[in-house]
Length: 175
Image (tube, rainbow, N blue to C red):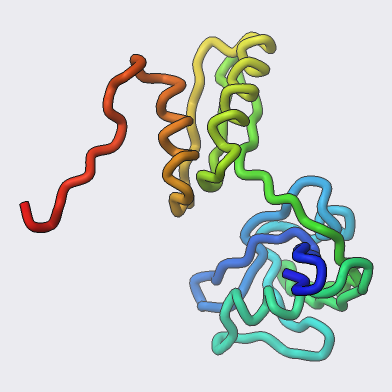
């Protein structure tokens, strides 16, 4: 986050580690500078602006190098298969999309990456769009969803539950 303006400028990738504990691109935000440049999921981060990454590097280490002032450029080197690829990518403000969808054989798939303040409303709109396209069944893909904001989860659940029914219970650890 740019402390002067409060905006996040980056390249639009989600970063995780592979089985060897080396940082990789785990997801690419649609329409992001990373997608436009050609980065793909499972690309292995080797270097950014002269800083090399390896087993000792964390996703946060990589993220710190990829973020910067809006409009500035960052050099990124990745390993794709056996090939090293270099990119110069201009940082832009990033809007993270928590809900994505697609249709396959009349099955509407709604992928929820995490629960944010807007997830419930976005799922409602997405559900209507999928039904309009002919979806007969809806499947929710919550794989790798770490959770998020409770209101986003409860608003999403309330779309499918009877009104005025409890969604969340809070129990004291004292019984």
